[in-house]
Image 1 (cartoon, rainbow, N blue to C red):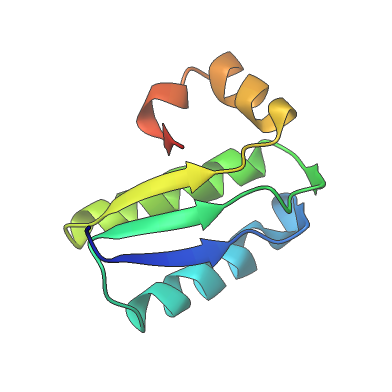
Image 2 (image 1 turned 60 degrees about the horizontal axis):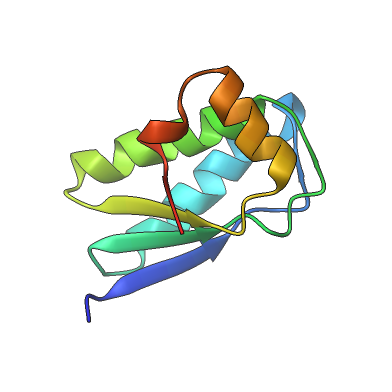
Length: 94
């Protein structure tokens, strides 16, 4: 089984929280090993399209490090937003 790091999104992720959340997650990743990062999204309760921007930027940063991102526990509305913006195929889901 491949090593992986596991992180969680906050309960609220809107434009106001996007940059601090991204920086917090990126900082946590710098301290962990593993080729795959599993991001738990089931805690999200209040969010907007900024949540997708955070996921996509996190994915880009991980790819630059040779790592992959898997998102678990997608809230239905976040899945719908990803489909609406045409980015669902970029974010591996479990």
